[in-house]
Length: 610
Figure 1 (spheres, rainbow, N blue to C red):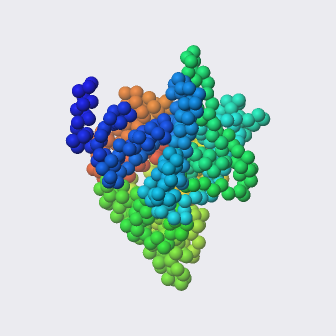
Figure 2: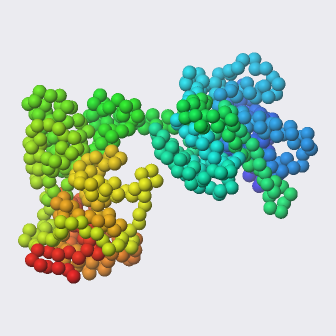
Figure 3: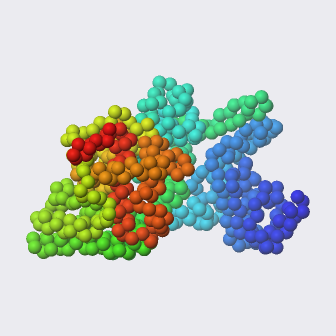
């Protein structure tokens, strides 16, 4: 209403309101000399309009800031008939020149902003080529010689490859191709195979030194235009039945761009976009945060590979962070008994290393590196009840030292001391009889969903499964997973069991040597749980839980653990209760995997559950 506009205007003028969001007409009517900042969310139409609007700031002669958020689409829109349709040919041409000039001004990250504005109005800057106060000048002063780089291997050649395959594409089409999508056949240049382009682009994007978000490649386009690798154009089409035409920006690769695209040794020197600076700043903050966490946790950065310290990431750093986060999580849950147990576990390995180093006159790091200590400790701590560390597993993960048997004995002592599961298993109950040859399910479980990772082409569980089938021990896999970040042994076992759900063969006897399957008594107990709770473990897990909700192990195990345990806060559960619950969860994973894969178990003494 007029009253609300007047009130907002007055409050802003007298200082009661610090920020006002307004239309151009309202903003141009404000005469407030001490306005410190003008922000544009989207570009104005012409240089003249922009110059007038930013002139609202700093009219008292003191420093002020003008910030504009814009993209190519803003300027293309202004070339449509909606904005230019009623202008004379001369006025239309002049307006288009001004639109293009403002686009160049906005997308140029090198030229002094103030100098560019003054030259547009045929004025000579008294300060020379550099004002020293705009973002371009400050960026040059801050970064010195680091104002342009070779982006060929960092994504620029990939953008050119996408543009080279397409016929005058929009930025949206280029983005789709860079994402690995196959677009409409008519969008490609004549004779180009869309499937082949998708495969090539996806492969090259995955081969980049660092994973880049799609927005990163988009930000390189204006720089590629400014350096002559791409040409920018405009296309338009009739807007339905109206008299107006819609316009959009198109790009085409130049001869210079084609040469850089085809010559993989050619450099592509571009100014560094602000977006890249922002990414690098965020990455550096994360790197420093990671290194500070490790230093606070007592790790000596001198013992971490130099390239990982420089990147703030890598196999060793991931391992140390994993352990640090694991311990911190236990502390937050006030599980200090477990923290003390894990401290003892790590201390045992460190002590063995020190004794071995002294005995054989070696450097401790040559006996066992710090990250390997953590990997062994993490895997040992996650061993299911009844499983033990063996010598072959330690050798497989890289422990190469005499005296290894002493370490195995020490780790087994710790496991026996801490991995107790009271009341979980009756030693007198008949064990499951398993054949030497792998069991192959008759079909996949109907609710198994296969979701391959785009980068690896494998499902989450598949790498562990494949390595197990090739002969590796689950503990070895846990200490050396595909992504370099240690995982629990139980997670590896679950991955292998997931193979059953997808119809893959699994040597059950070999897997049972790591985590024992249910005995006769446990199988009967879990079968009764199905009867008591009404949950059918072979049905859809999204709807087979309480009141048709998601299936949860703790709800299924109520008949075993009791309502009191399930309702307890996790901090209030005793270590014995947690061990018992973990045992039953491992046993239930076996039970569900076998039931879902249509396996009929047989137990010692001829007991069969046909």
